[in-house]
Image 1: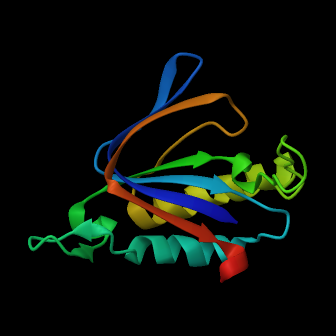
Image 2 (image 1 turned 90 degrees about the vertical axis):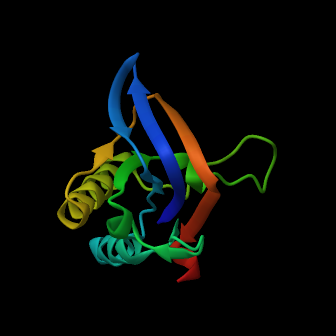
Length: 148
């Protein structure tokens, strides 16, 4: 599982000209799934995400979690996080999870986020999405299950 987590002031996701997800201050999570991932990993990552202290306190230190600031969450599937460019100039995506399996874990991830954060906005799995965001900081965190 790979995630790019961005602290944002606001973000939206649009499909076919229709806005399907929108958040104010919070976290934009791009999620890539591999066939070796599982629900236990999702549980672990969502718990870790809930405690991630990347929001600034009154002294300007990153001591606050998303719950502390009343932030929102937008989750967008992104299989291209598994792009492999080792050979040639055209990326290979063979390490990305099969669409059926990846969608299952993406839906589970959204479900766990909704249980944890209350409400979660999301993109549309497999769709051509346009994501608009204002990164706050910028503050971007990269998580990869191969590192944990």
